Length: 139
Image (cartoon, rainbow, N blue to C red):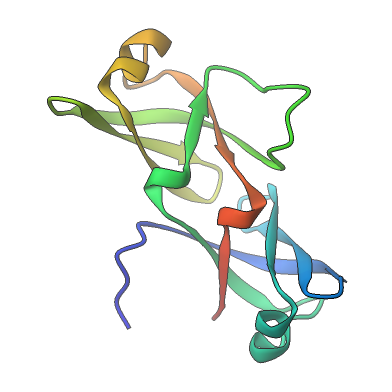
C-alpha cells in the first residue's frame, strides 16, 4: 500500500497504557528519540501492539509544527530536535524538510512562519507533533 503521508519513521513500542477507549503508545524511534501516539484501544488490539513490536510512526506534514528551540509548558508530547535540510516556498505555504536522528520529517507551514522563524538550510529546529496526530502501523 502506498500512502500520501510523507512522515514515516521506524521504531519499537516501549510501552502501551490502555484506557477505556484510547491508549497511549510510547515508541522509541530508531534514531533514539521517544515519541507518544494516542490511538484507539481497538487499534492497539487490531495491530497487536505490545512492548517490542516494530512499528512505523506516521504523521501528516500539515500536523508538524516547528519551533526554533524546545518549548516548555506545552501539552504537545512530541518534540523532536533536528536540522532544516531544505525549504521550498510557494505563494502562501512552504514545505520544510528536517533531518532528525533516524530519518527525515516534512512540515507544511505558512511562508510567513518560515520568514518569522528565519528558517533556512542548516537551521536548528524542533518538530512539534501532538500525540493524537501520530498514527502507527506494524512493520
